[in-house]
View (cartoon, rainbow, N blue to C red):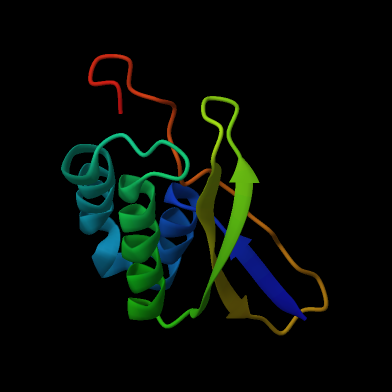
Length: 114
């Protein structure tokens, strides 16, 4: 069966097990997402940029990668927002599957209003 992993930082930690040489780069991934991209409110351009980055990293590590877009109503505005889930799949030999999830978006930044 498949192990479907939906995550951000958690899957990067799993990938550490696949390629120990990348362990040093984990902090680089966290820094890029938190500092370079910054706050990622749901439906924002920054969240989309983070999803693109995560999908690229999954592909780099050889995971079967899928990006699923979905729409939702925001409580903070009248319009419909678009967000994405990034899914990385590692085929396993076991009939069991492990699903690890994490949020791609972050709370709204009250200092910058983003």
